[in-house]
Image 1: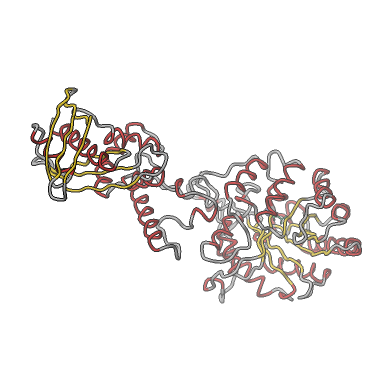
Image 2 (image 1 turned 180 degrees about the vertical axis):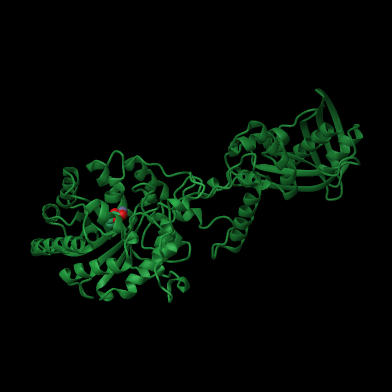
Length: 558
Ligand code: KIV
Ligand code: ZN
C-alpha cells in the first residue's frame, strides 16, 4: 500500500447542489421494488443458475411479494431465452407480476429479447449503455455524441418492435439505464436520458423508467443522493418518469446510497435478496425493505419466513448468507454478552407484562417473530454471557423461573463451567449444570422419607435421612413442614440454619416432575445459600430443597 495514496487515487468530485433537500426528508413510504436476482445476481455467480433453479427462485420472489422481477438477459444465452419461454408458456407469471429483461442497445439483441417475451401479459424492456468517461474513452473509444447516438439508435430499435408485443396483448413499459451513471457527469447523464426520452416519448399516463445505476460505488452515499436529487430536479418531464435506483456495494454503502437516493426523490429500487451480485454485490433489498419496516412503514413485501427465503436463496445460488448479515443472518438477533442478554430479558419481560405495544426491546431492532425467528435463538450462552442469559434459557426452555438472588448465585457457577468448556453451551447443558449444582446434591445428606402433619400452629414431622450413607430416623416440630424438618435436622446435630426465602412453582411438562422449590438459608457463618428440590409433590420438593441447601452449606464449610 502507498503511504500517500493521493498520488494514485483521488476523491470523487462532488455535485454542486447548494439547495439540496434530501437531508431534511424522512422515508414514509415504500418504493416500487424490483428484484434483479435472476439477472444481475445470476450474472455474478461462478456457476449461474440453471432453468429449474431460476424457476424455484422466481417462485420464491413471487411469494415474497415482488411485482417486478428482472428475469434475465435473454439475448445473452439460450438458457436465459429458454427461461423466459418456460415462464410464459407454463403460465408461471401471476397476473400482477411484470417480468423485466435487460438488453444492450444492439438491434439483433433487441430483436431476440422481444421474441423471448412474446405472449407475456406485462413486460419491462430494459435497455442500457455505458456513459462514464472511463467507459466512453477506454472501452468504446467514443465521444459523448457517439455514446448518445448508441442510446438513441437502440431506443429506436426498441420502439420499432414493441408494437408486435402490444398487438398480441402485452403491456410494455420501457426502461433506460445510463450504465455507470454515478461515475458519469450529471449533465451528460441528463443529456443522454433526455435523448432516449425524445424517442420513447413517455407521458405521465405512460411513464418510462429511468434507472440511475451506481454500477460501481465511487463515492459516499451522500454524493449519490446529490446526483439523484440533481437529476430529479433538472431532468425534463420528471412527471413522465419513474426514477429508479440500482446500487452496488463496492464501498459497503449500497444500502445507505439507496436510502439516501430515495430521500432524494427516487420512486423505485432494484436489488437482490441478501445483496448477491457482482463483486461486493447489488443492493440488499431485504435489508432496505426491513429497514423501512422497522420504522413502521408498510413495505408490500413479505419476509415472515426469512429462514425459508434464505434456504432457497442459498440452494439456488450456491451463495451463503453470513451469520452476522442484517435480518437474514443466523446471528442477527443473537446476544452472547451478559449485559446485552440481561437487557433483552428485561425488555421482553416488560413487554409481556405490558401486553405488547410499540417495540422497544433493547438490542433487538425488530421482533424476531415477525420474520419467523424465535426468542430461543436470541440468547445464547458462552463464556461472555452472564446470569441473565442463563436464567433466560432455563426459563424459556424448561420453565425454571430462578429467583433473582439465585440467578446471581448460579450465574458464576455456570460461567466457570462454560469458561472451562471453552465453547457455547446449549440450554440442555445449562439445565444439567443446574441440576448437578442443586437438585442432585445428595451428599452428605439424602432424604429417604418425610411425613408431616399438624395444625396451623404446630406441625410434627417424622423423617429418615441418610447422613454419609447411614440412615437416621428423626422427628421435629415447627410452624410448618419446612420448619419441622429444619428442627429435626438441627436437633440431630446438623449446623443451625434459618430459612430466609422460599418460592415454588409448577414445572412445565417434559421435566419429569411437577413442582420445583427454591429455598434460601442462612447460617451464622454463611449469609445466603440456595437449595433447590424437584418432586411430583410440592411439599416434598420443598423438603428436598432444604436438603440441597444444607448439603451446599456443608460443602462450603469444609
Ligand atoms: O449495475 C449496473 O449498472 C447494471 C445495469 C445494467 C443496470 O446492472
Ligand atoms: Zn448492476
